[in-house]
Image (cartoon, rainbow, N blue to C red; front, side):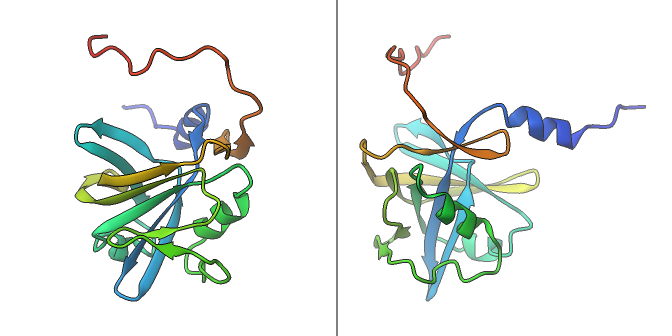
Length: 174
């Protein structure tokens, strides 16, 4: 008999890997959609591709599958309220938020640490999530804003940065 996979222990182990916190946004017809994600990653530099995932149970998933473009808002350390707001399903997430539309992409939330404006490249099944791959058309980075971090089931902030410069990008041949 195969051992039972402990999902809770798996989740705790994954929590040891800190991630950034983002809100991905889009507009479908007259509907503004947005969701908090921590699954944002770079995928390719040539062409410039990113990826994120959304749970198959998300109420807004049918709209996301129709989205032709997205804006990834990398949240700043003082934006835990936005992260919480956009993590709740079936609520008026947009009430009181002054945002700007990036044509063909999504909505820009004020105060983000970085923005990535993308068009849909591909959508793939990934277990209990859908993987969305976007081609980056433009981006902005605000170096004076520190990113919001999520680790061990909690929000965190970067207290300091290590002074050693990373050897990045990594060599192609490991």
